[in-house]
Image 1 (cartoon, one colour):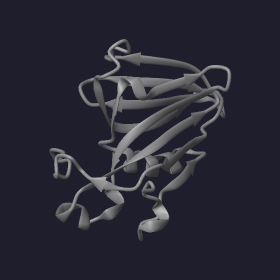
Image 2: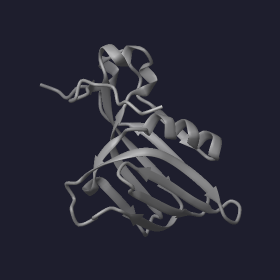
Image 3: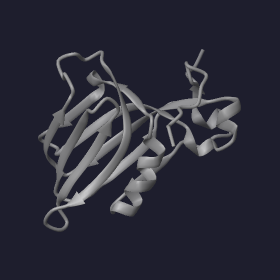
Length: 155
């Protein structure tokens, strides 16, 4: 038996990059409602890289997501990270599941700035970056969302 591969399905994995706020807004929309355990956050100080292994909702499926909501594991990677701060997160509790609401960038001294990952429940992660460089890459085949529901947001 072999592992499932993207090539075996009709879906193509996402592999996107962001180098400015406009690009980041696309990635932010795609990672909205992504969930991940605290233990899946990694900051490699030597490489200036912060990465999250997330289970993102497949918003790109459009109306099909209502009939058969799916998630996919993805890597969300930030390069040029010089500092990481968090609020409302117990980083020692590696099993706590966090949910991303939005991702934004605020420039300080061009091209440097801060990336803010706003989390459900008043949590946040702030990354000081030399410049905005983000990648989002799907790393598994899509799977049926365990809740079998599409995330809802009050209007």
